[in-house]
Image (cartoon, rainbow, N blue to C red):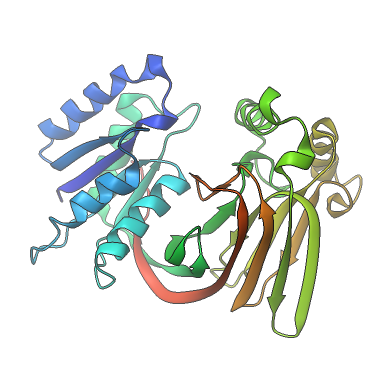
Length: 297
């Protein structure tokens, strides 16, 4: 059985569920797979812990890093590793902390089975260079998000609709402090190939990397009353109307692509709060990165 470093994003875990982390750590330690076990928090975020782990990755043995969290937690871990040393290629395993699958026994089973099987695939490695939010570069896997997390209501109409997750995101997105959408929407421009587009009143967008023959794309949520976005999503699942006309828009993307976001206010890029101002960056593909596939008995 391969041992691994563990990083747990506790900011995603409800207070009443935090106790299960001790059980998870105990079972993994008993299975002799724990090289290090780090718990990220608001005061000590995933990026900081992953960078500390990266400083220990100077041995010849390649060990995987298991991230218990969500895709943003995985991106933060990846960014920390490659910011420290762009040549490092330590396999990453993401264990999603969801609404229904976070029992200790289930997660431990996922982790142990995945470490035992070591099914590794090379995933496209995205790179944004420019103001993100300060001048520099940032790597990411699968998707790069500007604005709040609205993944549960993205226009993947063949996905299973997670009501609890979706409503949590909806009320978080349009909470009491941000119901004036004019204050949280932003305008932005996109240039790729011979195409130049301008978008106004956008609430959030995600850049989705293409893989397995699927082209890269941008998915965004436009400004409109939030109940209408929910209705648009449900109608889209039933094929009643074209969802791109109301609320959702999907744009095929050719890489490289240039983004310029104007007058952004109080929103996040990939989970990190930005200061007000204008941001611009270029997106490219920087090869691949080894990702361990989650497997179960």
